[in-house]
Length: 345
Ligand code: PHE
Image (cartoon, rainbow, N blue to C red):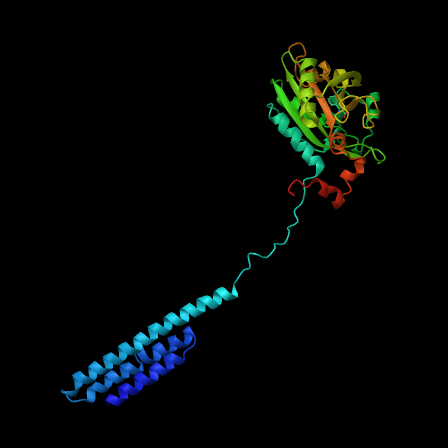
């Protein structure tokens, strides 16, 4: 009987010794230590023993159980440690390996300029307005003081969708929407950036689609001097401190007086170079005081308020600023061109 115990114990220890996975060890635990396991079986043998032999036998079985349990626990530790280190080995990451360079897109130069202009005007308390690119003739022309038959309609070759609907030819259309929306409430202080369209033959300096940003301020006692100060500030931020701003008389139906605005050439500082064609000045935008009739049509009293407006072409600013000589570069999506504006490198 006693030999039986020794035998079970030996056998168990040998198998535990051989077990090389945690699953196998678990199997052995059931085989030997389980409720119907071999050691429990030994216990049941006690039934046939005499009263005197029972305690010694029981004690032996208990020792055997302890020995086997301990051996299992030891093996469990060894196998767990092994499993962890092999897992670590398998999942090893070489952090010294050079990483793959992730290609990320770049911000389009026109968007860069637009963001710069937005930042500078938002900083002065302007709001940024939006409007539709497919526009009503009413906002693009009528409210801007360009009625049917007005010769100024010829200045802007228009893509018409139907007689009343068109692709907006200037961001002035948004200005008109905003004026109308304000419903006579002052002050108005906003910029409206966006795409505009004109029937034009594309070449190095013309594009049938381009981008403008309009500014509009309406309030009490707004003067041409306010416009000049604002544009001088914009020129300083966009082209570098110390710019001069010059107004030349011009004509737009929606402003009176109207001006063409030149900035002293940032490349030669006004001395004359090939960018400014020797003049020392570069024309950058059209502007003026909002025409009294435009104010009136939009529900404002021109006796009580006045305003200025300006419209700048973003391609022109970007071309000057970044030395780009062909406007088509903005629209042909040549990666080699766009990558040169990578600000994240
Ligand atoms: N809308 C004019 C253009 O497209 C620019 C402009 C805007 C002029 C506002 C004066 C005032 O050429």
